Length: 246
Image (cartoon, rainbow, N blue to C red; front, side, top):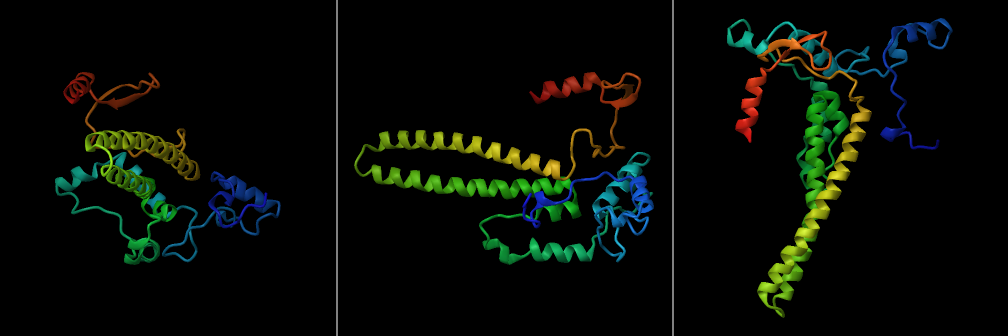
């Protein structure tokens, strides 16, 4: 379809992992080896052979399984653990320092963030934080030009018109500009957010939640499936919190 191959949207479609696909393709001679790395995207870190699962995803898989059976923070407070944290990768840190953690980028007014690189290393939550920060800075930068223009027009008008009238008109004009700017910014961020959600396969039916072993609740029938018993916060406590918050 004549799309530039270097663009993200031109990447191959996402294919869920299934070892049977690799085995069948190898059987009919499409793949030389019965190795998923010949079909799926391979990520390289310390191992030269690579892995089809990113380092951040491997950590989240381990962390999710551990949290289903153990409260790490409670174990640390009781002295069972000294501390727990994921170790950094020097290879990834060198990549991030070149494209992101560089003081020369302070003069870059495009506020471009290496969101995909951040996502591959830190995960989706951190990536969305910096994606929002970069977008918000660009939106405020665009609004600053309009603010300067309106303030300059008001300063010139004060020389010929009553200052009180000018102040009212300047406030009204900038209020209208701010409302329009906010609507445009929300629409653009929603579009960008949906783009990242689709690209990172973070749909509603995908499981990205991490269990909270420290959650205090009572086992009750699930609102989604009454046949399942799940931990839920007591209804009277939740109502009290909502009442106090209002």
